[in-house]
Length: 164
Image (cartoon, rainbow, N blue to C red):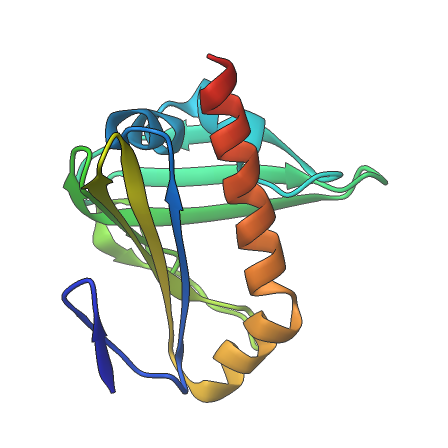
């Protein structure tokens, strides 16, 4: 195990995406926490995010609906675990709002995401840590294109914020 951003990273079960960008932390935070902004970048193109619900508090809902180019929709519902404005956002699909355990079907990819924002000059050091329950889930997420997908989505976030 190694430490990253104050968190212990298990290379068999955790994935990390790190970038430094010329966007201040508060703008990255807004893109993650304002539904109308999140819908514009959250899903890598050509997919889109067509709905989003955010109750920004521990136990609050984090729900997104993604749509494929063919019109297939995929809803994700989770729960915020930790919210520190402009610094840290932690959410999981393992729990529903109010910290209620989520039903999990065999084969469902369930993870906890830690988003860390650190000032870096005029910009932000952005770190996304995605924690999986086991090595198989981590390998599945890697095979699904975690780095490409989360990287492309973050590039879309940066482009959105730079336009505003």
